[in-house]
View 1 (cartoon, rainbow, N blue to C red):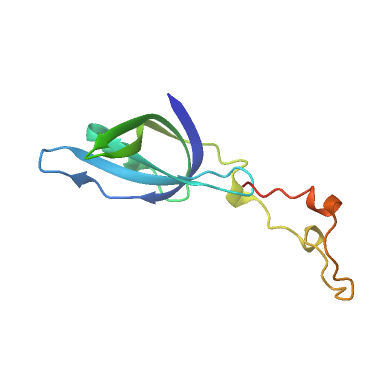
View 2: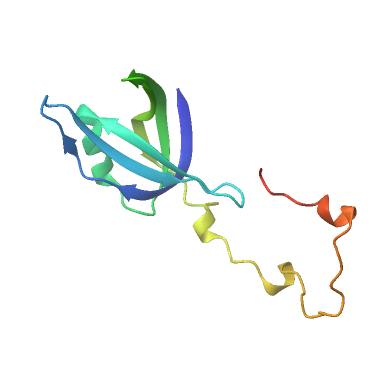
Length: 128
């Protein structure tokens, strides 16, 4: 069992297949740190209606399992939601204020255009 928290970004319509199988996909955006992630989940069979009570932008907590399968030599992974609940509204990223001008670097002094030093680069927080 896994859990994820985020804001609903997309709620797709229910898909019905010839066998009678139904599924519904939705996407949440996680609000953690500077690098939010869009994560797609699917809900199947009678649980498809669970999404009817939610709206785009609403914070949610998703409980899910990871499902993997092989088809014709290709491998697929699905995040299979089995429970979704309304999340807390405090602390989500959409309520945070944008960075102020005090947080931005000052590029007004164009006369001092030199290579960054190693001390300048150590604070780099690029995730890759």
